[in-house]
Image (cartoon, rainbow, N blue to C red; front, side, top):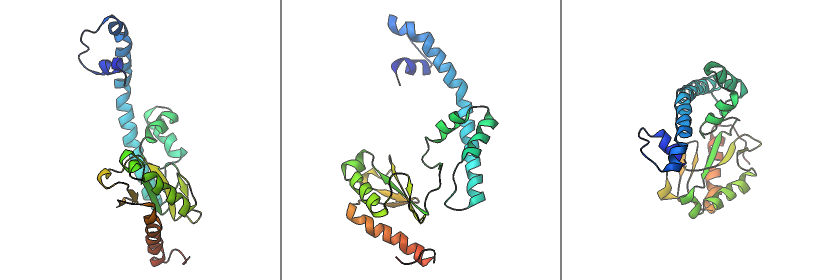
Length: 194
């Protein structure tokens, strides 16, 4: 955020130098536009969450995702464009716009994980699964994505699979992790033995 915008968002603008004072009206206008839109954005997120929950409950499987119909409904209900709804919704990694696998593997590559081999772990998952970022295996069992942070920096590098954490990993751990999830599928009778 630029200093001028930061000043505009603060209650007390104070006395700046001549250059800053010349920009204050523009910054105040930006503040007004932001504050006027904020309730719409919050309302949109609430509605999007409700619609996502209804999509999840309706499908009750790994294919639950927000499609164009949901985006259009949210936009229509709160009176903003579909692009504005999509721009807000895409910020949140838990909202899906296309189906994911039964086991969604999220590999953290943020700074702590990156410095301790997160990219190497991600590359090994890509090799083992034969898919890239946001890909889904042909059998629909696994999906893979690179994420910014999963909040376990002290135990980097780390991943989560459907919110189940695996930490202090190396690329050598990847085959065992995948085998454990394949085993779960076999136990449930959903996948033939490889």
